[in-house]
Image 1 (cartoon, rainbow, N blue to C red):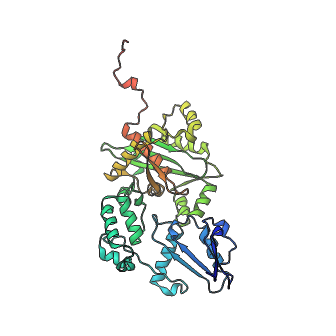
Image 2 (cartoon, rainbow, N blue to C red):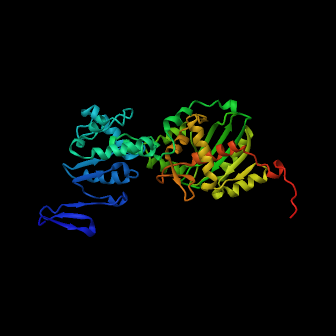
Image 3 (tube, rainbow, N blue to C red):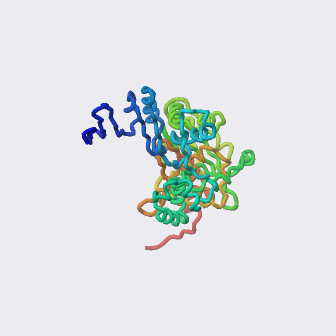
Amino acid sequence: MDATRVRDTKNRIEHNKSRSVYTAISAEGDAQHGKTISLLVADELHCWRGYDLWKSLKTGTSKVTGSLAVVITTAGDKPEGVCWEMFKYAKKVAEDPAYDPTFLPILFAADEKADWLDENLWHQVNPGLADGFPVLDELRSEARMARELPQLREGFKQTHLNIWSDGSAAGWMDMSIYDEGAAPIDLKSLEGRSCVMGIDLSKSYDITAIALAFPDDDGGADILCFPFLPETTFRRRAEETPDLPWQRWRENGDINIIHGDLIDDDVIAAKIRDLCELYDVTEIGYDPKFAAKMMAALAEEDYPVAQIEQRPLVMHPFYLALQKAILARKFRHGGQPLLRKAVVDAVPIPAETGLIYISKRRSHDAIDCLVAAAMAFGRAMDGGSQRSIYETRDLRTIAW
C-alpha cells in the first residue's frame, strides 16, 4: 500500500504521512524502556513473564495525551502474575465503574463452579459462537476428550470459558483434593515419633527444603516442611511475583530466611541436627548434587544419611506413592503454603522410559518442597531403613 511501508526485517509498519510506526516487539522488558507509545495492544497477557515488560510499555503510554492500552487475553494456568492482577482489577472496576473511569473492563468469563459442559454457558462466554467462532462442533469434540483427561479439561475451561486454573492443569493433582489434608497438625504429638527426612538442597535462587514424613499404620503420613531462602533471593522472588504473600510467609515462619546471597550449609546442618534431636529420624535422604559435602560430615557424626539421586527411575515410585496418598486423603500437610505452591507448580514430565519425573513451568516456580516431601514420604513407605540386605535376608553360600 502507498500509505504504508512494511519493514519485514524490523517487524514494523511505517505510516508515511503521520510518520507513526506499528512495531511487534520482543518479550524483553528492559529493552522496551524509553518508548513513546500512542497505542499498546497486549495479546495473551497471561503468557507474559514477570512485570518488567508490562511496566516498560505502560510507562511509555503515559508520555502521550490520549494514548490507549488494550489487553486481549484468556485466563491463565495459575492465579498469579500481571494478568491475574489485571483481571482482579478489572472485576473491581466492573463492580464499581466510578472506581476508575479510565479503565473499561469487558469480561466474558464463567463462574468456576458452573457446569463447564453446559452449551448455553459456552454461548454466554463466547458471543461469537453463534456466528461460527469458535466452531461449535470442534468445541464439542474438545469437550468429549476433556471429560476423560484432567489436563485437557482444565485447558478447555481456561481457554474457552476464561476460568482461572489453580494449577490442576498440569495434570498431577486436583488441588481441591489436596486441600482436604490441610487440617492443623498437632506438632506436640509428633515429638519422639519415628520419621524419615528428605532434603532438596540449593545454592542461591531455588528454595532449599527439608521435609519430614511421619508414617501411620494406614499407609498415610503427617508431613512437616521447612523451606529456606537466602535474603537476596527472597527479595528477588518477592519482586518477580508480587501477587504472592512472601512477606507474610516470612512473618508467619512459613519460610526461613538466611542472611546473604547463598544458602549457608551450616544453617541447614544445624536445622537437621535440631530436628533429629526432636524426632526419631530413621533416615535422611538427600540429593547429592549440592549436599554431598554436608552429608559426608553428618555421616561422620553417625547421622543416618542416604543418597537419593534425582532420576526418574528413583523418584517415579516416590511421586506415585505420594500422589496415591493425596488422592486417598492420607497425606496430611497442615496447609503449609510453600508445600502447596510446590504442588501447584509441579508439572509431570514423562521420560523416554515411560517413568514420570516432576518439573516446573517457569524459572520462578518452586517445586523444591514437593521434591523433599516425595523423598521423605517415599522412603517412609519403604520403611526408611538403612540396614544392609545382608542383615535381613537369608543368604547362603553358593558353590560355583
